[in-house]
Amino acid sequence: QVQLVESGGGLVQAGGSLRLSCAASGSTFSRNAMGWYRQAPGKQRELVASITDGGATNYADSVKGRFTISRDNDKNTVNLQMNSPKPEDTAVYYCNFRARIGGVWADAYWGQGTQVTVSS
Image 1: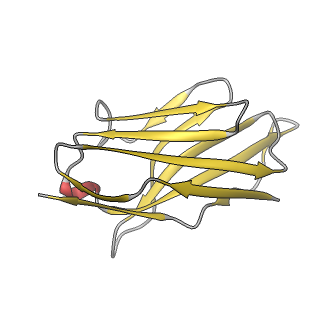
Image 2: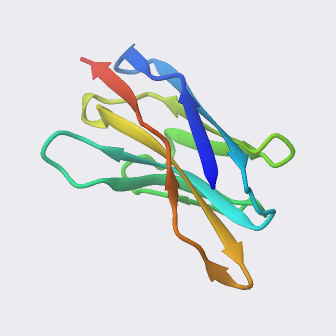
Image 3: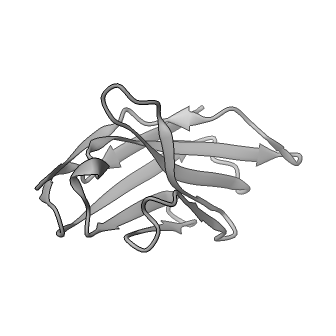
């Protein structure tokens, strides 16, 4: 089992900045990927950004150049720096963790979600 605790959501003005953090605890295998997904009202949950334990990153096209994902492997934390957010970034943001065991990706764990609201 893996527990994920998110922090840092809230209200931010468009063009400002906001930082989300997520701490993982429990059975956190060293080979893993952590990331952030979001879900806006009436829409499907979508990937925002992910990062592997080796530092490989993946971003949604809509956030490239504005958001930066980073992690601390020693602390099992992942951060999402949101610069120049737009009203369309408003959503509930979820932290995600997946372990890679024997070359196979295990089921994902999810945080409870943190609301991010971007005002225009």
